Image (cartoon, rainbow, N blue to C red):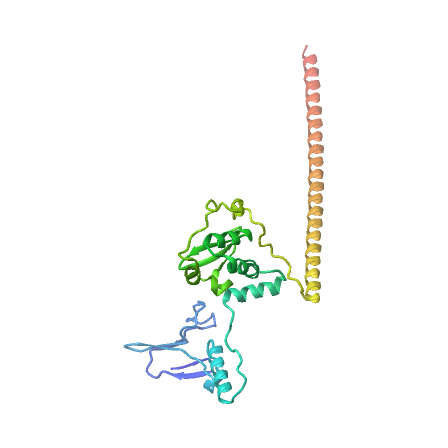
Length: 291
């Protein structure tokens, strides 16, 4: 029995039956229509079934790109630089996932990320803080809270909508380094301080993260953003106008329907009154004739 699949021919001499499992022709008896590609051919023998899957491999193994090959390439580049006395360059990513996302956000939106804002506000506070209370209060003034999460610390934006690992802001903000410097972690307590900042609270910070535009942005990108905003506003205006036109049309249709309904009601009322008057007159005539 001969079967052809994916350009290959297979002979099953002693098979009772053999067919292409993922048959595309709906007119054939073996067509099932299920979206699957696990088995290409099924052959039935007296005592067993044989399943055949056809795969295509490249002629040369090095033509297939391995998964996550950037690590292999980085190691090879570093090795070649050492062997040939070349200037060493960095081949490994130096940014964490959070840093990469923050950079992408700033590049696409042109606004400051929470990570950048936190670094700008938190690093001076960390340098001056000599206690957990001073650190918490300094961060609270910038609308940032430092909290325990899991085995580490996170910095949370004042509305509790954004949180980042404290160690991403700076390695000195890691839980281990802070506890080595300030002692065991102490949560924020607004009622513990009697200094000038005792009236401050995380709910009423002096400044907060606002996604401010990044200074010194490329003028061409500013033009691009302005064009996008203009187009967005134009679409919004057009949609509002279309909705108003549709609303007015619906009102006109409703008014016309109401007028037609009133006209029909008036016509039927007049017709009913005429019929009643005619019936009354006929009854009066019949009564007079009878008398």
